Length: 493
Ligand code: BGC
Image 1 (cartoon, helix red, strand yellow):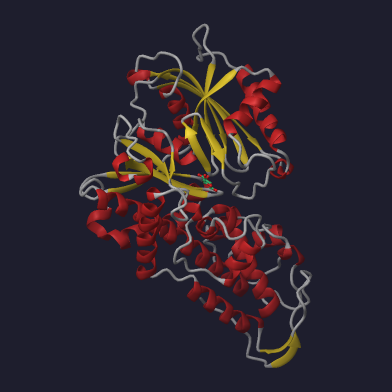
Image 2 (tube, rainbow, N blue to C red):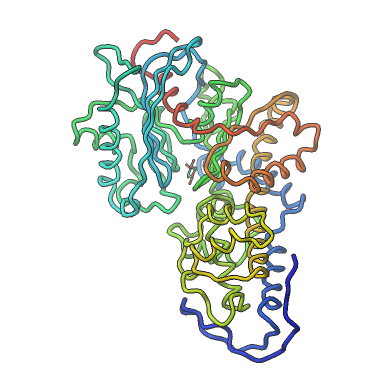
């Protein structure tokens, strides 16, 4: 990092006037750049993820997985049974719908499946954003909104899509929040995550909530599979590639699922599936063991709608990276006069700096960091010179590096646990980890840091066999495929 600090003019000043309500403090400073450096240095130190830290995280992830499989509530990781015991084979046929609620958008999709030869004959989807007020409204309001989006979409069916006479349209419902599944087509919402705080859903069967909303609208469709987005992604990726064993979402939130042996799940108490395998939804966003956290993470958590929860998610996922950077910049502005005499007012607004903004800044390779300059100005109303912009880039890099590397360590934890239980299952052959989510898709630095951590932890020889692969929007088709596998109608696959 290079800082073009002016000659150290030691003077006694009041720190910048902050519009965020932080009291003004009198202290001796040299120049803005110089006082910012210790904040950056401490941040880098607190966020550091050298190999021993990564190793500890991977080991702790594996240990927490075992504890969560032993007994419900045994660890931070819920290790939820998905009731998905058989994965798509490629033979699935017919028209199926998928409904995907998991973040700021919700998607509806239909797919006409043509079996082994024709595979995906046709697919159509639509995406709608969830109005902000619905994230804090009532359960009825949210599910009515979803059901009416689905009804509108279903009305437009035609062309290559065909439903045999006398059948109901079947839906694979991807609901990407912690749900305690009670069967393949029912499950109780344990809690909301990702900033949702809808009243009246936690503790209820979310399929019943959707069914009631569909009834209110007179929409006659049937949910035949309720799945988490990780499970949908695994199913969707497995449809094309038999070596897929793990799926990870890195988007607004984060989570991972994997294929587990039923005899390695003590809490199943001997209830074996016919395949001897099942998919476990880890809900790894709740992991918290041994993470390198900072004062900024702790403050953000304390002010969140779910304090003390989803700590891994708050450290590595897309909803939070931009917000952590904003908090660091605010401290640099208030305590280090990063932006001179005053603190830019917009910087006081939580979540004003989004992860896509910091990603866009990190893609700027111009000498003057012109894109960084305009993003800072447009998003946060911040006027900056080159030395400030370089510091800001270092802050982004520090937070993103920690996130990507910890995500990589989490993946290794899962692979390690699988390998420990069945020698050679993972490390002796090609193994695919299917990845999806906007953060993974759109943030090349994050992806690189993740891959680096996996390679560092596994070593070159083993990591050559571990293929971390983007499976774009696999979860929609995956949910539709699982609706097909669990169809109430006779099928010839
Ligand atoms: C939810 C998971 C979900 C993940 C990714 C988390 O906040 O708890 O169920 O899979 O986000 O969407």
